[in-house]
Length: 485
Image (cartoon, rainbow, N blue to C red; front, side, top):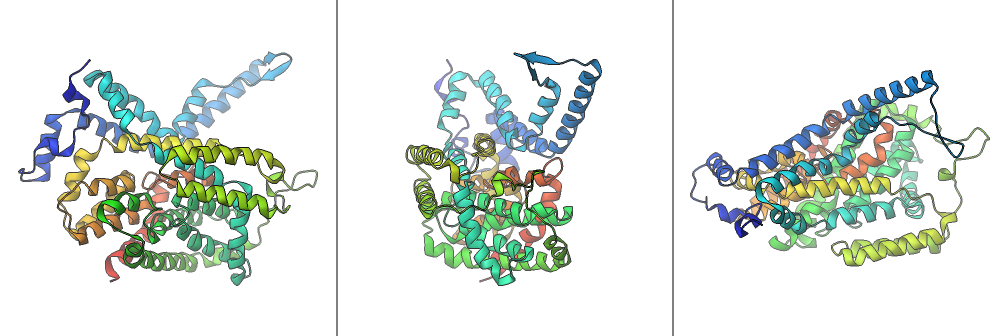
């Protein structure tokens, strides 16, 4: 049993008593000397970030190992049987590489060494105290809203609404592409960003990615989607995670967000979409000729792509449950029972539904849970950096920091800096939402998009190519927030 002081890990920022230190470097060195575990857990967080850039390598190793394993068993003609059935003999090494190549599981995996390091140096009570004070509401909510938003009634309803708008462009691939990348992100201000990401990614998969665009266009589109989703939640004060973190402490209401962020985000989205539209306009003609209809060898349409109508009552019930979930998004005691109602209703109307695949939402939930655990341990170095930057540099700094730490964490830590002026508060949130598309970890909904769309990318979504695809829209949105009055 350790003493009470060790229960405070990480230490509250005011416990360091370093306000009189001259530079940020002195503050950071002082905080490492006060508690060396600050540096240890941050280095592990850095390892997790580096790991995300290695997922493609691990997946290639997994496939190579599995191929070798299967070839070996075929040569030896070895089979495992149980009750007359052949049981697949898997390679443990290949499965381990597959696990290490799952981008959604990386931060959860790196929580393990953090957990045991703190346990060894500070004791069971300390790490238990920290883990039980971490707020896992957002990861739980993302699992629920992803599952609901990917249901067939919600997908078909969203597709019908988007199809109506896409008819302006005769329902072409270009029209679908532009509508989904414009309207979908704005939905994030009302049905939350994870919900908007799920719907937008599913529709892009069906109307765009299934037609096999070039790799450059594929990465440009996913980068554009991530940036647009990140800024699309700024029309309201309750849907985007980074905005939610500061809306209460800074008294930012709905009208404030519209007047200071929303309209600028819309202009930035339209400019970014239009630019990419012009650059890739010649490729849209080729994509229009591609037939996405899934046909089996017996001539029947795949069950998932059937066009049978869904009763309006079923769709309405789904929408009402989803509205309840968004309304109660900060209270698991309310939205979890609503999720059980959804699952029960889905089973009772199974003939109108597609199979519910819980694996992607659960993996995304694990990703965010791991990120929340790591993010809560980074305040010792992020807060001093934010507090030391001038206004323009603060926005650029928040954009860069967001790429390596969830923008909601950046927003929350900014509320702990007492010296921020109103213009500096605007700058840090503008930077946080602008940088939300640069990496998978930059914005909470991004792992959901990767989970849905990665089947269209060999060996998964490359972090470097995602960064390049999102870079130009990030610059455009940054200019919109910085230059528009």
